[in-house]
Image (tube, rainbow, N blue to C red):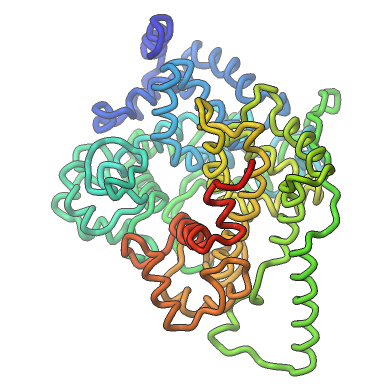
Length: 550
């Protein structure tokens, strides 16, 4: 429970939040936990109130502990958790944090490209090893900090409304509850059945939902996949707000940052998916140059190791396959030509070479490296790692081991798998720290990072027909994609993917598609493969079953 002083603090926040912040609070959110969440951050979104400016100043220092003038998604995630716990106590804060966590990355992505380039922008490497000439803007700057909370308030309500429909339960609880069929996607039936629950939420795009549910659902379903994902839901509703000229629409259409504006405009990717609205990044935006007088954050030491046995075997197989191809000059079939070369990618081998050496129980050098890496991952020395800290450690370790550009590429490529590894490791030791990874669980965290990265690599080999994420990828595998591409994953060290016939492939897809939606999401994919490894009692299965020593 929050203390009395916290309650009084919240009342002060309410009275000092300006009209602009209050105008973003929609009627539907007032009856749910969203209103409690929003009150926590409303003052930080305030543009004109003196308290808002003062609190943002102190909050920026809290969110940017390295004082490098950049805030990553991991740092924002940690800041949100700490602020919720401060204002609502351990249990209440953690519950709110979990409930609305799926929308944090959407708010972060909306805000991070808003600020125009600084006049002092130049090439070079800034503090903390972040390149100031990078064309990829992956951080929030101080000029974007207020707008981050504007977008957070909006996306919390978008997720809140989404949760009223997803699962067909209308409970107003935004978190995932498998017992209630909550799977982060909305079917047409769910949408029709829950239309009365969202008609009066306050979004312009839902005002006529009871009269025109089919048309609205069809417009939301950007890629005609038969289901509406959270991203599609948010894109559509924000675009409708923009068209309607509402307070919310004005907030996302034109945002004034130091006299510059960025517009939300409809757009289409080069692939088959359509993104209805997005913040248009400022052309040529570069990360501002940071002061050379500020003490840089120490980087983790790169892990120098010899290639693992599995990496050597993969390399030998690759060489043999190359020689065979050169001598036979075999032409791939038309159905296979759009997919990458079968088997684990070179990027996967680089990723595994970084973390697999930390897995050994008996190798003295592995123990020493784990001790060093634990200190890098636990900068607060509190003996516990949050997901945000693990995420940041992975990124810095990859950058230190493979240099900044390649390390950052690897980090992004396998990032969707990190939460699966974290969740698998955090409850191994039991006790009251099951939301964190302890030092006792650190070794198997690295094992899980390797296992789930391999599963992610196989997933990416089929999704969109190529590695990584591009315009053809939508983080889900359709039946047709699977049937055309299952041959590309047959050489992975995953028992359910070995030498699958077309007939077996059809059966496997049906088994993976747990809710019969016609698509396999990443969580369904890794869940299915993990269960198969455990059932077969493979080496991976023993680790995944949490029966291995840690």
